[in-house]
Length: 143
Image (cartoon, rainbow, N blue to C red; front, side, top):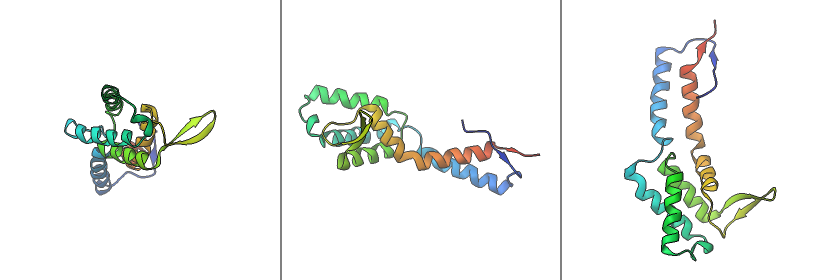
């Protein structure tokens, strides 16, 4: 969970209620995708992979296996962030570290950890706001 925080004064009932509402609003934006969204994730991944010249040489089974591995690796991330990351990577490539240098990759598709890093970046704002609301709701009041 988040860091232990102390508040100078207790939250009012209205403030607590507003924070709880905001936290509940943010939750769907940060949790893993649902079974009903899996087809959307598959489509986003397939489009992303198809944007890379080196992916075109994969056979049907190899391509399907790669998508399946990615689906398993991305289960705990929201579908919207996966789709956004895949679209961004398809258009711009992604940044990877190569011998202590950052390189923009546009020929080879990302590995699962590389894709997850971009997905996390897309969801960061929502995750940070959710964590902040959680921290405030769980904070102790200073004596």
